[in-house]
Length: 312
Image (cartoon, rainbow, N blue to C red):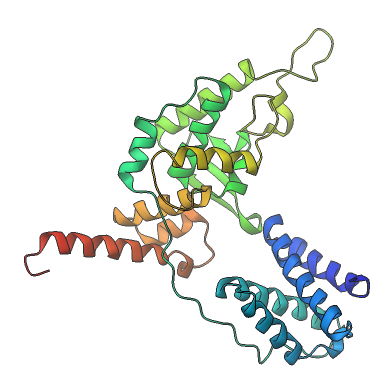
């Protein structure tokens, strides 16, 4: 169906992957957005050449998305994908001008990031029981790491033992665009990570050993977190574990690793942390992405005011 568009699609994907260095998740999202638009062109406009795609065609597609009840945020991302796609085509000399010039991006209402209350996080680590097996130990450590560092799930599953600097009590994290950042760790967390690594080498299941020797399966790729079978932990397993344990302490609708990232940032800003420092810890490219957490701080101040001030 999209055969005639395949070469430019591939060039677009290569641009995102190798030049912009977007994560695989972002690349896949942009690719799906683009292919959805091109499928629409095939069905409704008989697959026009790239140079014949007009702003009117784009608007017709966007209107159909609104009819299908797509959120403003989803439409914003799809428009962003198209803008980037046509930008690549112009740079490659495939078209002379972009049809996106007159396309207006819909505004979406500001949505404060959800986060877990401090008391609930204390309950999680102080009163919720984790199994004494390898999975329970792994689950507890990843939850602590999410809350203490604010790292993304993709960053966590790709962590390697070598990224832990015991001497300086810090973690080197490779984030979006292959940008490295340093996150400080408290001594207790460093000790727990060291203990995990030691137990992984001694107790994690062994496989692929040579004759007369045993080798820890976890050694492959120096990956920090592994399953009971000694295989690298994947995103799906992390999501399931986080959802299971957060469900025991919070009624939030979404219970994901990203909620713990929001929780990390919100608790820091509520405690008076410098916004620029929080930005660096999160690995945000701009301060604007971090400023949303100040809204949560303001809401907390309003709540304190309402409860304490006689004229509130």
